Structure formats: C-alpha cells, structure tokens
Length: 304
Image 1 (cartoon, one colour):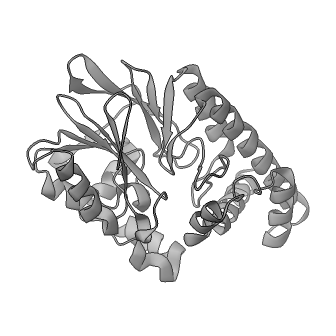
Image 2 (image 1 turned 30 degrees about the vertical axis):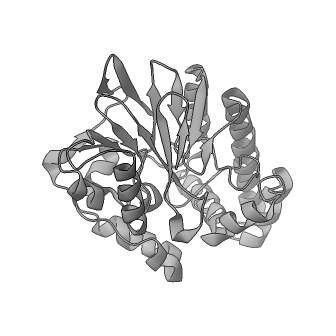
C-alpha cells in the first residue's frame, strides 16, 4: 500500500500472493472512490487496506470498475457487502455480469483452468446498487472533484478509463498495457473481445486528455504518460498487424502467429527482469495474448 501524490492510495491486491501484479486505487476525497478491486481471492486484502486507510463500513462512496474481467472486478461483490453504502459504477455492457456473474465466472474459469482457484469468482451485486456509466458520466467526489468515465474499448468492449479532472490523473485500466517488475509497457490482449482498431482509437482519445499523471492496473504509476500512450499504440499496432498477416498465410497456426507477433514487437523489454517474467508467467498472460489475437483475426475473417 503506497500513498501517491494527490491523495491517491495504491493498494497491491496481492493476486495469488504475488506482489506487484494488480493494483486498486483509492481516491481519498469527501466521497471516496476505489477504482478496481482485484480478484475475489484478494477481497480481504483490499478490505483490510481500506480499513487501515481509515475507511469504516459506511465511508466508501464509490467502487468504480474499469471493466469486468475478474482480476479487476472479482472482489466487487464481497466489498459491496463490506461497504453497504458504496455504489458500483461500471460500463453498461458490464452491468449484467455484476448482477448475474455466472457466465463471466464460467468463461474465466474455462480460460484459466487449473489456475482458477487463485482467481475465485464474483458474488452477485444487487441491481439497485449498480450505476451504468455512459461515456462522459461524472462521479462526484465532493469538494469540486469528480471522476469522468471515458469509454476505451479494445481490450474489451466494456472497458473504460477514469479521469480525475481536477489534477489530470488518468486511471487507464488495461487500455495502454501492462508494466510489471521493472519491465517495459507491453499490451494485454485477452480473448474473447480484443479489437485492434477500437484499441488504437481509444489510445487516441486517452492521449487527447493530456493526462498529467497516469496509473495502469498492472501495475502502478507510469513515469511519462505521453510516452507510455505512444508506446502502447506502437506495440498494439505492430502486434495486431502481424497477427493479421500471419492469419492470411497460416490461418489457425498458433506457432506461426507467435513467431510473427514476437518478431514484430519482441517482448524482451517487457520480460527483462526476473520479477517481470515471474508476473507475466504467473497466469499465462503471454499465451492469453496469442489467444486474444487469434480470436480477433478469426472474427475479422468471418465478418469479411
């Protein structure tokens, strides 16, 4: 748990007991907001961190989710019970999965297989506590501060970023990429919804916000928001175009897809430390990137 400038409290959710994998961010304000919350297996860790920060059961006003992948939203149901006054804010496409998480949990467990117990599930949240955030929706934090929802599809159709407007702080979720263990920013491209064109358009929108500071969910603050946004754009473009080309001459061949993608944008800088490699390998995220790219090119081929 680290206190960052501007009353931002970064909480390490300790995914699978590994530090520096997934972060939640508390904005300490008149109406405190927690952005993302980690997996269900991290719920007690996040709850205890909020208590240590001085928040009692009636003090959390908002639980805001960048998207409804379980490494970001899995603890939401448990935390909603622990903080009964908090409203849960989510993209409209994600709302139904919070009210009835059965399909989301089943799909996630099918993807992660034997690793699923480290992720857990998601307790259902009453519909009356779910706020569907339109693009541009503002979440009042009090004292003249607010969070603005900025739809940012690509990683998933239900992905959004949050802009704390008073200080220009962008919480980018997974739209830009992942930086862990001292490694360079690198895209996270999971199945089943990754969309290269939407992702690049989202990065243009986020760059247009000209953030002063930026946080990514995996993991923490980035040194230079503009440089990271540009890096994310170049990496996703290179990897996505390589996947399209590989599919054109070797459809369905994952080995060919991997060779093409790695040649177009080598992951060496992202995996350049033992800590980075450990975190990337912990949940097969590199393999999931290939499945996400394969799903995208196959979907595009069907639509032609």
